Image 1 (tube, rainbow, N blue to C red):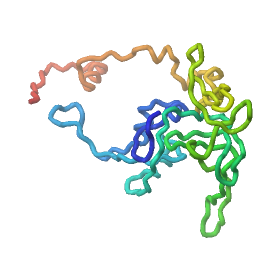
Image 2: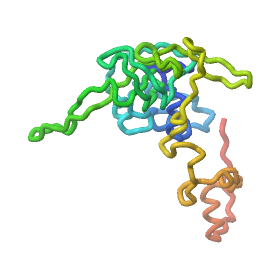
Image 3: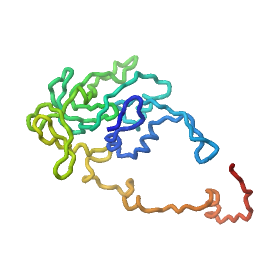
Image 4: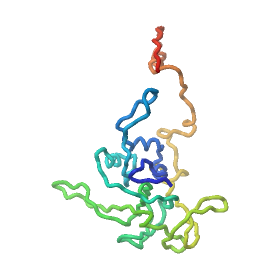
Length: 253
């Protein structure tokens, strides 16, 4: 697994999969480039001034809330993460909490924040917070689930003993990579909820919408033919304007 954290500009693989968006789009959404040299000119070296440190939170990297939390001038305490070689927690997993007021309780993972080694367990490890508080309004108190560290705060539940267990990745005879319980050597399958994205619950049940979705056949079809002409030339050709003048040659050194 990649190394994430405060000093990283990488987004986790599970986050990209859940967004159902290209990784390049997500990167453009959250990165902050303040200045850069124009591209395509040999006299300008590739250089830019951009934000290098991002603090990942429960807000997804492509959202406006994430950008506000990482706005220019906002100073936050550094966060250091323990590297994880093989990520073992997925949405829909049953886990047991090892710390806090809900220690010993089991629940289902409802959200995975791979960039911070976090998981959110549905209905557990909650706290109360007030939203909408104003001068003449006391606000509304809601119950919010706080994230838990996968390295110290939670463990997967063994499907045979129904107790917390460590896991390791192994390969079956067919070559499939699976999670195996260290206690009972039982395979812990990855739940179906892992396939969920913002757009659909599973790929098999998703139906393409002709008005909004680009079909696979249309995506593979090449509709653009490159030509050695400028945008102005294309407009003149479309409008039937003929240009007989020869432009002055220019040279780049």
